[in-house]
Image (cartoon, rainbow, N blue to C red; front, side, top):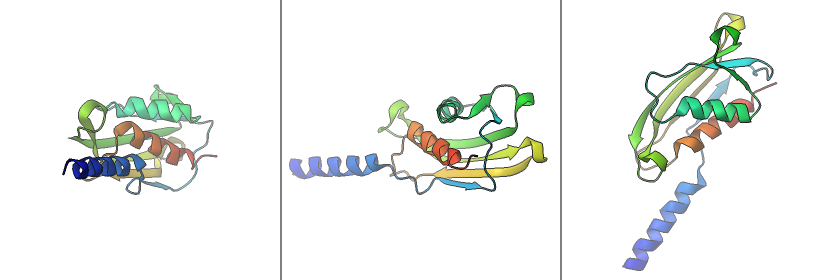
Length: 142
């Protein structure tokens, strides 16, 4: 019985570590210009540190992030809901996230929209989801 339980725990841990992001959807209407500046709207409550993580990951992937909205070419807004999870650091994960990137030089035209959700049985940690999001956004740059 103990061997069966240990096997099941290892099996589900391995499945959780494979981290496919089929439920992370990123739709791009046009590519982002790499030399442009992105302003990420701060959240009133960001207990998972998503804005900081997204800023760091986009910067790492070559984007210019600005804290001054007046210097920005693009404006990124997002919202999320969280849930408890004992598998990931911080004991909390994203349950649902939605966001958009607007082109401020084209009358606030939506050029990217994204969403992510996971069920109570999935264990996709926040940092991994945000890095996957940043990579998908980077795939659509000039």
